[in-house]
Length: 172
Image (cartoon, rainbow, N blue to C red; front, side, top):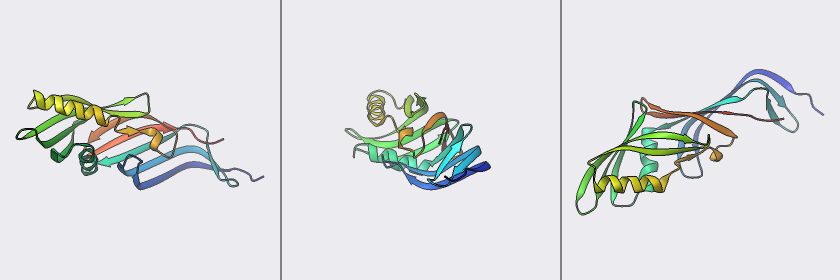
């Protein structure tokens, strides 16, 4: 039997991870303190929960959302503004109309991220159409798709990026 190797701090950075739903996560960083590596068989043991941070870009969010929408919706643009997502697109119902939706992101059960519609310009039937599409694509993120058992704690959107943070326990 091998002896565990103690490590004061460990960090692993991953880039370009494609989740099963097709969403591309630009960067994932996992870190832990007081880690032990068990060499044979390979295992990591954390004495305290580790942290996880994942980043997605506005462009990737736009690409992902576009792939979830019907063909009548095009030119999707996403902006991370003040903790919210602004999604703009052109939809053709009878004629083409540009709609802008302000959304917030909500963590549900420490596992899922849902998009919640806050407002739509213009409102009326366009708002109902957008709300039904959001309901169809939720949840947009499931922590079970990550390679670690993660509990999501926060989601923020600033400076062109969406950042998801959480904690995980591992090993033993």
